[in-house]
Amino acid sequence: MEKTLTRYIFVTGGVASSLGKGILASSLAKLLQASGYRITIQKFDPYINVDPGTLNPYEHGECYVTDDGAETDLDLGHYERFLNQPTSQMNNVTTGAVYQSVINKERHGDFLGKTVQVIPHITDEIKSRFTKLAESGNFDIVITEIGGTVGDIESTPFVEAVRQFKWELGPENCIVIHLTLIPFLKSAGELKTKPTQHSVRVLQEHGIQPDILVCRAEHALTKDIRAKIAQFCNVTTDSVIEAIDVDTIYEVPLKMKAENLDRVVLFKLKLMARQDPELTDWKKFIQKLKTPVSEVSIALIGKYTELPDAYKSIQESFTHASAENECKVNVDYISSEYINSNNVSEKLQKYHGILVAPGFGDRGIEGKVTSIQYVRENKIPFFGICLGMQCAVIEFARHVLNLSKAHSTEFDPDTEYPVIDLMEEQTRIINKGGTMRLGSYPCDLSPDSKTFKIYQQKSIAERHRHRFEFNNKYRDDFNKAGFRSVGLNSKSDLVEIMELKKHPWFIGTQFHPELKSTVAKPHPLFVDFVGAAIAYAKS
Ligand code: GLN
Image (tube, rainbow, N blue to C red):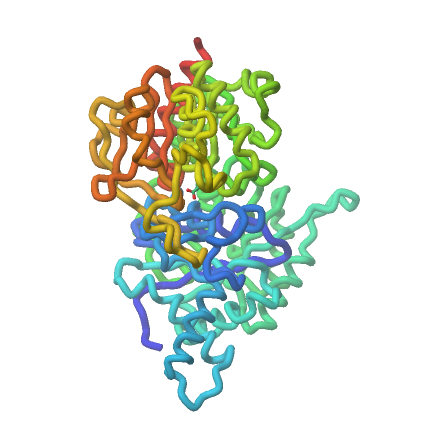
């Protein structure tokens, strides 16, 4: 392989899953970006689905959608939120996508006469994807997060590809950071290094000597422990980085800075530290997050409420809006399945704002409609996202327009009043994967709307992921009755935003604003919604 100017950093994980490889990759990227490097992060996932779009959120958390319409792993959301720069289809690769492309090539005859094998065909395909993003010439450094835990059968081809790639590029162009856990044994009163030693040994058995170890721990690593880890795992002592638990993920870059992770990385890659990371705004953000002057409680009503990862981007958007408003935002997850007209007031009255979440399938729909009627009539701030907007349309049709059994054809295909209906182009689609209305679409705002005031611009672009839409047959009826279509796609004439006139804050969006909120640019709708909740709390 040719020598390259782009440097590569791989992040692997050992000992346990969920140690936060995504946050580590994002934090390191943030520090390097703040030092003047052009950087991107990609995620390689070991599962066989071609993308996570067909996975239930309980399996794999939220499905994050990029501008170019890729359905991806939720870690890409962290990459965007930390770096304030968009990712794309190319930033997420799965085993399924790798095999699909190798098998397509085999059918095409690209390997005629050869036996197609994991090595070299699958590993070659993986390696070609390691470098894809760098081909644009836009990046000095590419960070690749390898999903799963080293030693899993599934991730072995990825680990082998990293080994080959590192050998081909040489040590100054490619390094491996291994994230492990140093558990604290209460009974012994000690931090234990053995699991980390074993996990590094697994990597070494695969032919990879990690360059840096990042050690998750609940207690500080002493000098002795650092020295012991370094010696047993064959790394320099300054390459043993402590990652102690913090209050918010946004503090991790500062912790990693304090541990000199960025310096050690640049040293190993033989790169100059161009400048000390410029983190003034980042620190201000954390300062505001940690010293709120007010407090509100928001109910997030959905159906995947036992797993907060299912609504990761919404949660993070509230965090960004919380700092912007200097207000502590408590978000309670409430399952709509158990809400009915008898208990709705008891369940929702203590909240200063209600968000009805995106979703699929009919479980809990009636509870969402009941909740929306309650907040509409009681003038509690309401934010409906995608399915949340669709439920608001159903509620308004039933209780204000008196179309008593109005519904979405997703839930009642024979409804007399299909106020939400399948989009024309969706009616012919049979395959489920990657076929929704996906990615960024433009939207024009009515100048006399609240939404326009919030965005401060006439044309916006937001990301979508849905098959159903507001049915334009009913548009005039809704507009006349005061639930107005204030955001439209000029090309397709699809309704993207609905806003209720006689209400302090009642907005539904067909798109997902949460996918574009970042630390540097909190989403205006979330910021204003929290502002409305603060006003409601005061009143
Ligand atoms: N199930 C609805 C649709 O497909 C809403 C999807 C969503 O909330 N993302 O249109």
